[in-house]
Length: 67
Image (tube, rainbow, N blue to C red; front, side, top):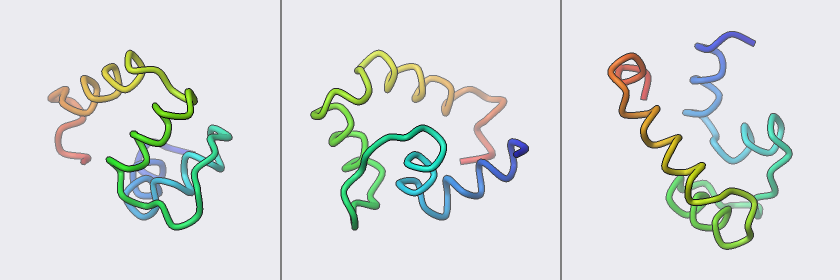
């Protein structure tokens, strides 16, 4: 899968993308990105450091136009 396909899948349904590609468990119907992040933090599926790293990548000029 190329990067553009991944970006499109994330935009369309972030929960499904994470569950299919990273085996992360997200309750059905939880589609808001902020709620997903909070759930993942609360359940220990990701660390605050991982979230911070992802946010830094999202704000990087190279990726800015994708999101």
